[in-house]
Every structure is written in structure tokens, then in C-alpha cells.
Image (cartoon, rainbow, N blue to C red; front, side, top):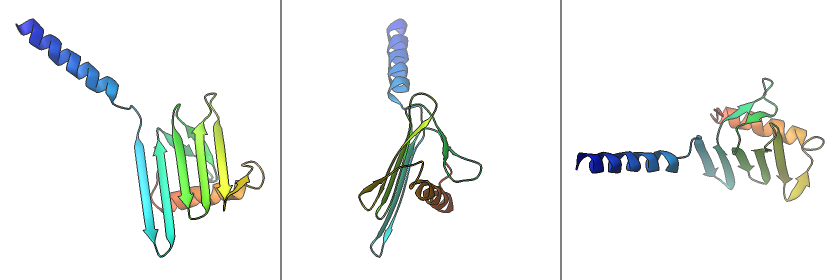
Length: 118
């Protein structure tokens, strides 16, 4: 009887551990006076030392930032790099040319609002 009870406890513990996500999930929302700011991330996220870009996101992780008409999504690309998706009032921007300043502004805003990444 003790073996059955121990087996059930071990099975329940294993199911609980495997069902939990191993990353950190953070959501920050700010609204008011026709303004909406939303920051969401999953996994480990690190900014560059200059605080102008996302330096690292853990595998399977992502960072989403929405501030009124600006949307930024950054994900781990599976090869150690970052893939960006940027929109400014519905217009898609290139993260390496006309979107660089948008990324820098978003990172600075996230830090100012208390988002610390990891």
C-alpha cells in the first residue's frame, strides 16, 4: 500500500513540474487619457549595456511592447539572435534602419516603467 501511495505522489509531483513553464512571464499595463502602454515578456530578456536594443532573449522567449501606435515584438530566432517585428501606426519598419530609434526609445521607456528584463 505504501508503494502505491508513494508512486502516486511521485507521479503527481512529476506532472506538476513538467506542466510548469520554466521561464519568467511578466506583464505591465498602463492606461489612461487615450493612452495605453503594454509590456509583456516570457523567458530571460537582457538589454544592451547602452540600453538601446535587446541583447538577448532565451530560447522560446519573447518581448512585446505596445505604446499607443507603436508595436515591437522581439523573439529568440533559435540561432542565438533576435528577430524583430516593428510597426508604427500600422507601417512596418526595418529594425536595422528606420526602426533603430524606435527600438531604442521602446527600451528606454520599458526601463523607465520598471521593466528589468530578467
